Length: 129
Image 1 (cartoon, helix red, strand yellow):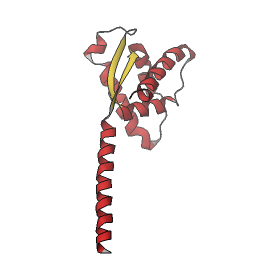
Image 2: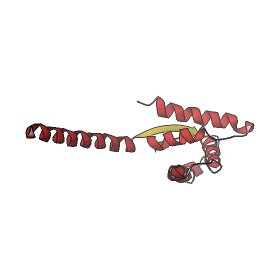
Image 3: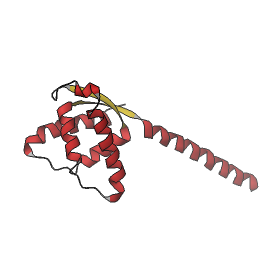
Image 4: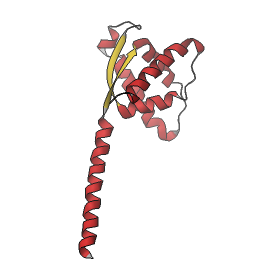
């Protein structure tokens, strides 16, 4: 009886350890996103207008900060708004970005840029690996 209890505790600890390791690796997994710089700038501006719940603020701020770093990087500043760029981003953040975009309201004149970026993000998220 005691041996069975020890086995169960040991197996639970081992399983918990491997689950935590797997979750940690998933948190750092990156994907490559190819996008038009002007589309990315449009989406970044739309993130300023989105309404979020209190528990979503941290995720939103992380996305905005990441997007700001990309937009102000020397590589992007040297390119035109019509050029493409490929960046590596954390998959979990890209997924949050994709989900937040479902709530966005865009002008009809921006629909094509919005859809192109969203399709690129969807491809990077779901067609990678």
